[in-house]
Each structure stands twice: as structure tokens, then as C-alpha cells.
Image 1 (cartoon, rainbow, N blue to C red):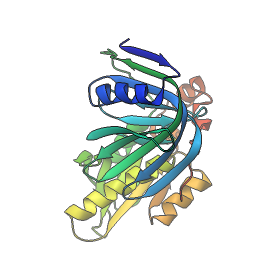
Image 2: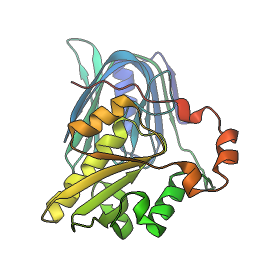
Image 3: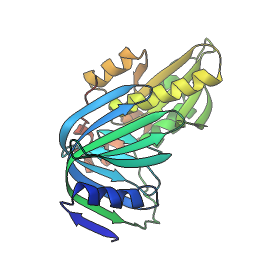
Image 4: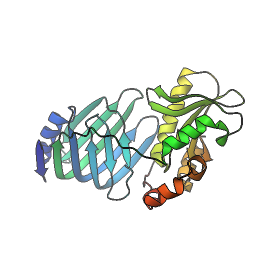
Amino acid sequence: MEKFLQSPEIEEAREVLAEYLSREYTVQINGLCSVNYQGRAKSKLDRGERLVIKKQDSAILVHGPENYQPKNWQPEVDSYSVEVDEENDHLILEAKRNNPEEVVEVRFEEIDLLTVDQLVDKSELKIAGHEVDIHESIEEEPEIVEEGLKVIERERETPAGFIDVFARDEENNYVVIEVKRNPDYNTVLQLQRYVDEIDEEFQGTIRGILVAPKMTDKVLDYLEDRELEFVEVEMADVINSYDAIDNSQKGLSDFSADYSTD
């Protein structure tokens, strides 16, 4: 491990982060912080104790003490900056993405732990009964989403990431489909980014559909606020052995991220 600092002074933490954030290191920060996101949407997390992880591929994730989903995240960061607010003695970490323009700002009031390390993991995780099974089922039978749907491409690349399924409906409108077993607010934001990217590239009506085995009322409200759609697909309909697989993972699907917006 390159660095292991317990309860570092703000300036000491700033020096370490300035050295390692933009390099291929895994950086972990535990502390009391607030988080602001600005981009095609806006969100705010008030002060709380959180775990911030900057990964070696530049991605950043902000986790709370509960649930497996991050409260905020940025899959690809173009630049990091870190400075000290001397008036309040706070450390401010900014993660910026250029296309689309997005900024995650994390303001630390206290830092309990700061670690820097380089991790090596060359193995691949193989999972059955996951989103990929729904992707393949939609490609084989597009009508499980809606009648008249025609799949154009799977894993279509955009500046915002890879669209799970790109299609046209029976009225020839473009349809962007995001598949998620456990959708949350971040899933809605990602779908909105994809729709915006396709809207910039093509003329006409662009529809966004979130396909999932279940949906909470809160996430459904997020979708409706953005005029995005939801289609429920049962895992048992897309993979015969799902019941056995799901029982072995009992409890994972019951978690959801707690996220607030303003």
C-alpha cells in the first residue's frame, strides 16, 4: 500500500490526493462530507459519513454506510482537482467529465481514513441470471418490451457510455432501452444521458425505456418526471433457471439506494 493515513490533517490529505487522484491508483477516503452533482440534472447529498472511492480507471463512487449501490458516481472522469477552503477548513474534491459536462463536488469536513493502493485483478466475473439475459431476450423477442419493436443494435457506444439496446418502434421512433435488475435514481440519470446523446445525433422523437423485473414508486416518479418509460420483465420469462439462481442470491435485490435531489 502506497499510503495509509488515519485522521490526517486537511492539508496533508490535499497533498496526497493532488499526487495520486489523476494517476492509476485506487484511492479511498472515509469521512464526513457533502456532495453536489451538476450536469444534465442536479442533485445534492447533505453532510454525512461516507466512503469515497476513486478507481484506477478514473471512475469515482460515493457510498453511504448502508446499501450496496453508490449514492453518487461518475463512470469516467476526465480531470480531478483538490483544494482547501481555508475559511471553513474543508477539503474540496472535484471530479469533472467533459462530454457530457458533469461535475461531482465532494466537500470533506473531516477525514477519518485515507488510503492509496494499486490493485491487480485479472479474473473475470461470470454471472447467470443477470441483465445480459434480458438483453439477449429483447434481441431475440423484441415484443417482450412492446409490439412492433425492432432492435437496431446492442451495446451501442455513445459519449455517455454503452446503450444496452437501441431500437425503433412501430412508428419508426428511436428507442433507447436501459436494462437493470435493481434500478435506482442513478439508472434514471444514465438513461436520460443516453436519450440526450441520441437526441443530438438523430432527428425525431427519441423514447427512453427502463426495463426491469421490478420498480419502486420513487424511481418510477423519477422516470415520469423526465417523460421516460418503464416496462416490467420477469426474470423467470427470460431465463428458465432463474428461480434457482435467485434463491442463491436471496436478499440482494431488496437493497436500494437512498438519494435526494433538489
